[in-house]
Amino acid sequence: MRRAPEKAGAAAATGQPAYDLGLALGIAVTGSVAVAVYRAGIPADAPPQARDTLGAALAAAERLPNGTELITVAREGFTSGLQVAATVNAGFALVIAALVMTLLRHIPPISTAAPEEDRAPRGDDHLPDQEPALNR
Image 1 (cartoon, one colour):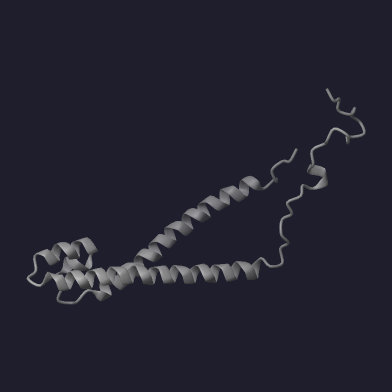
Image 2: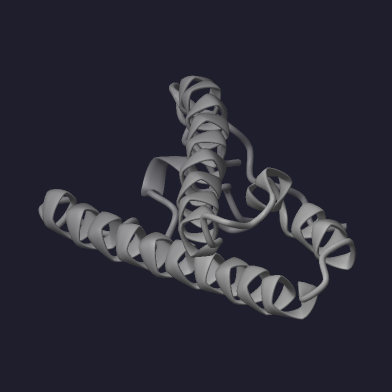
């Protein structure tokens, strides 16, 4: 019967906080990039609330005489922000993949075969101090 490696609990205890931290940082960086690109696309003469969110820009555009221009600019800025954020994330993923491949290339792959000492005994092979298994 196979058993878990001795340090399996430590690996799991380290992996979950690392995942949570990476997730939070990824959301923060992605959101910051998207908002920066969005705000850069909003004209200086637009109402101040238009810089906050796309929804606020659309609401502000309804009160303007030529609000369709602000709607178009806000939607394009929002889309551009998401596209730039996605490109930045893809770049991060490629850098991390290259880093992992470089740093871990000397580690051999894990074999799918069980080591001899972890292999469960079958009916015809038994330990010397045990009686063979009875077939019923």
